[in-house]
Structure formats: structure tokens, C-alpha cells
Length: 257
Image 1 (spheres, rainbow, N blue to C red):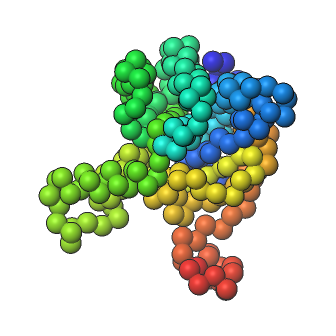
Image 2 (cartoon, rainbow, N blue to C red):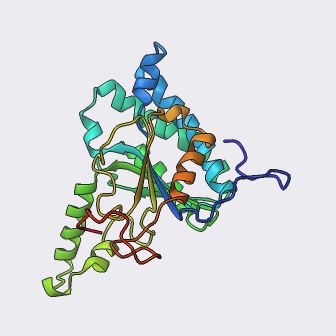
């Protein structure tokens, strides 16, 4: 993977606020491939290559947390050859990129269940997490075999198993039992390819995230596209259900805000 460091001579755009945590639904790989007369797996490989650019850009703009939606619990319903190809891509990425990611100070976290993955892939995922656990330059969270509803069910199961009384359950406790425990909630969610759906992605954590949807397919989502999302975020007035700094509600018809 190319070096994620940036030279002192480089000049970058500045923003009044930068999201601490960016989450990305990397959509459109298959359509990108189809538009070029290529098999779907070629699109997934191109999408994986593109991730390198976005990691570099996040480092340059001091974004400390990046979560990518790589494989959902629903993706098991895709054709067998595509699922197997995606698993192989994941293994190849770990084999070829892990050492460099570690050297660049990237911490890898897995979000989701290891079940159903091949034992060899499970071992590689766990090794990646352990090897990079002390890195602090960028935390890369990979949502693999992940589903938002499944995550909430798993959290409830853990709470019940621990014998916690119903009256002691609050939002903070639930958050501590999620796969994302210890991580800040996403400030900005980016979805490529123009689809207007959450797709079962971080449905607990994104309650007040800002969303940015672009028609650009993920393999073409480069740094210039990321900058468009950051500019949009920079212009948002994040009120979290409260009044804005001016004391006014931007949209009086919104009963929730």
C-alpha cells in the first residue's frame, strides 16, 4: 500500500471542523464493473484498491477514525462465486497490506461476527487486530459480516447474559455492549453510488450522524470526492435535537428538531 505520510511541502484545504469519525458505505462496485464490461469481482478489487487513496486522505486531513462497510450479513445471499471471491479478496488484502498498514500506524478493528468465515480468514482477522492494537495514527474499522440489527440483538443478548436489571439499562450501557464499544459515534456517513438507504449499517451509532450521498461509484471515489463530502460537512449546523448557536431552529417544520 502506498505510503500514507504527507510531505511538508503539500498544501491541503482547511476546514472549520473535521469529522472525528467518518463511516462509508462503499456501494457501486458491481455497477462500476458492469459499465466497463467487467465481471463484478473486478469491481470489488477496484474498490479495494481505492481504499488506499481514502486512507491516505483521511490521514492527511487528520480524520482519526474510518469505518468501512465491507460485507454485510445480507451479502451471504449473493451468488456463491461472488461471496467466495470477496472472501479471497479479504484474505489477499491482509496478506499483502497488513505489514505496511501496521508500519504506517493504522489500527485495524473488526466490527461484526467472525462466524461463517473460513477458519483461515478468522485467524488472519484476529492477527490483524492484535498486531495493530497499539497503533494510533488512524483507526480503520472494517465492518465484515456485519449487520446493524444483528449487532443490537447481540448487545441485548450480552446484557441479559450478564444479569443486568432492566432498570439499569440505558443508552450508555447499550453502547458499551455494541461491536463498536470504545469508539466515537460517526459524525459523517458517506454513501457512494447514489442509493438513499441505510442498508442496516450502524443504525444505533448514526442516530445523529450527518449523511452525504454521491452518485459516484466507490472505485471512482477519490480524494477530490472526499473533499466534497468534507466541505458539505463543514457547512452543516449540527444541533443534536437542540437549538442552533443563533438560538433558532433551522427548519421549524421538523418536530424532532
